[in-house]
Length: 256
Image 1: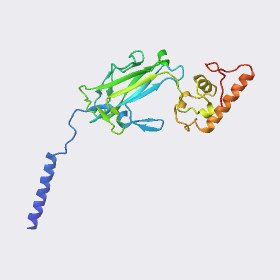
Image 2 (image 1 turned 90 degrees about the vertical axis):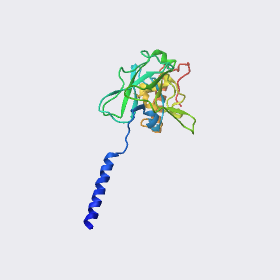
Image 3 (image 1 turned 60 degrees about the vertical axis):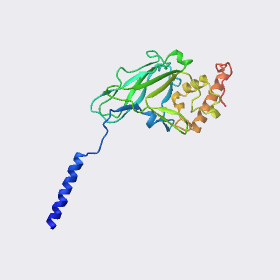
Image 4 (image 1 turned 60 degrees about the horizontal axis):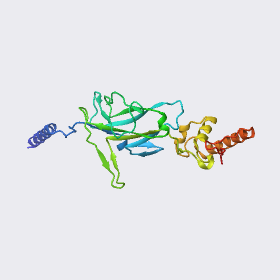
């Protein structure tokens, strides 16, 4: 009797294993999709993570010798990683005001490389004279092709009432200088482009440093105290030698 019971248990165990082999857990069978990563996983801006389907880039804090740059936009796969390269179809929306060949260029081939879940769309952005006066908008759309679908469309945030797109990305471009985040008016006074560039040139400061939050490296209270003292001495010395430094509007340049 004991032997019969043991054999019965072994038989049932084998039957269960066979059944599991026939009825494997269902996996993803649909065609893979692509979407812009920033709209789901977010991007770090000034130390804070935020989801976004539109961003801006300005040449204003770049040196005059910088005439172009590569803006990298990550694209992510919803589905399986492949062992072969897969092309991604990207189109320029007709509502874009940025002109291809003038303000930007797209790579001839955009792809998700073999073995990758995330790859990069590298947009070459050109610095043009008209960006000093105008901002230009580049709108990129992901489209379906033989490799990918675009099943992830958008998300409606019920709290804000705003819709976030997963397959459309907007990039605004300009070269217009505005007061950067890291400008500390209490120490440096009213922001002007001439004052800003003169200070950076005299003290060998990188303009892009001022894109950081106050308190970041180079933007502490002690740093601003040094910048202020240096510039006040410089302006005083220039004035004493008969060379008064003026702003673009004709007023004398001052630091508090």
